[in-house]
Length: 231
Ligand code: SF4
Image (tube, rainbow, N blue to C red):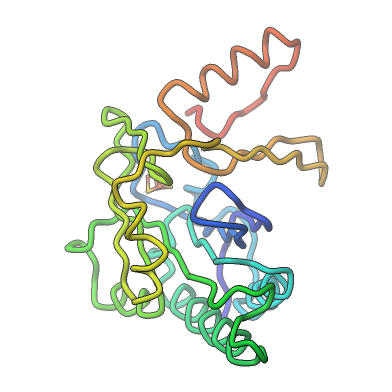
């Protein structure tokens, strides 16, 4: 099974607890005003990869001590079959890693790595296929990004967004954070030297943080061309 993605990154440290594998799906028709990831909107953009290739990355991440998988976008639930396959495979590899350890802990000493999905949908908007796609998720962050409702809540971009634990592991990992304000850095910057020098930002910025980044870059003599949050 194939999936269209915008990218992957390990270790991701700004969307969920611990060091995680991040997978960003490509394609989102929800078009929230103020979205920082407009480059993920075009369903024909990004890269076509197989779910099994992503699961290979997940297996490698587990061996390197990954504490979780974060699937974001774009809108993961606009490719529900691929999301279902990815989460089912990721849960299987995670469970095998946890049970294969002599101590009962998984790779890197982690008892179990959690599976977190970001969606712009509310739960009552989901089709049966989309609900089914989330069957193996330990927690889901729901809701559109609303630029007029800024928040300091950890791992969320606007105050309406909710963390919803779905499994016992999800409750352990996420219930303590549902009303928690972030205290550390909300953005993780990674320099991408692949085709051209680029700056990738992972996480959810505070209101005005991206404009401030543009201002500071400009005053340092660095111009950001085509930032993904500009129309
Ligand atoms: S914030 Fe998320 S749901 Fe909203 S347009 Fe951007 S990618 Fe889509």
